[in-house]
Length: 377
Image (cartoon, rainbow, N blue to C red; front, side):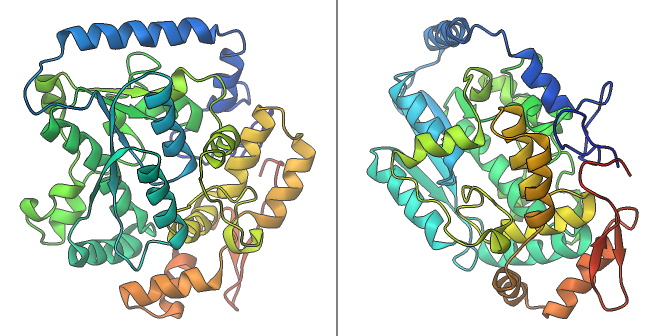
């Protein structure tokens, strides 16, 4: 494992490519230092005007665009910026988890969006199918979120096609998160999202479980032909917002009613308290990701803070060493109860998937890092 020379991004991130020892995200931030953001905003306005002229109007169409929301910092900021800055009329679309998975903060933040005056539709896949797929995903990939991410990413374009809405607004660009496989023809173009880390695995493994396609509709991302027939376009707002960041989005959203987490960092592995606001099990998944790739929530947060000049590399190492990969035992217990396994079975699967090049799994079950943060292994 090698670390970026500028931040603390490891090269174990899927689809990451270092050039001269520098990660793709740092290269992106270097490339935008001299961007004229006002000019980019004008380009977006021009694009929207041209799209509006050629949009096919019908008696049903009411919304200019659609935005997927979880009630988190990024989606809250997107919704407010699109409505109040771009003066568009967005439909907000939220894919709801089963009650056992949703945390109270997430429910309150979705309610906050409704109270801010938005039209919001909540969809929910079959709970029984959801539970079975999450369990299968956990034991097959050591990633229960393979299921929920497929549904989250697929539901918005499905809704856009059904409601005949021409534009989907998404948040950060692939360059901002280091997922170079999803880069489109232009920096703002999100129509190549199907190749992202999240979606590229597809749903064949679900078919292999014995599920018929009609039972898996919420998990199937529309194909290229469907996008082209309706001239549907995904636009990354991160391409047009020079101050797009985890911290700025949280501050912007907090001023508009967003509630953050208040737990101790050792329970969440999130030193800002602004991630996974709708789902405690995402924190558990970040812990597992840490054991698979050597980084979790804290590394991602610190890397952006370094890139934005909020913290130096030396201080960032201390935060990562202390809190990365942490998760409350209560979150693990609730997940195990949901998919009907024991905590011992959970940890058997986690230890099985731990990267043995990066971690030592001791006889007593402890998983100990072989690496030192910031130093190449």
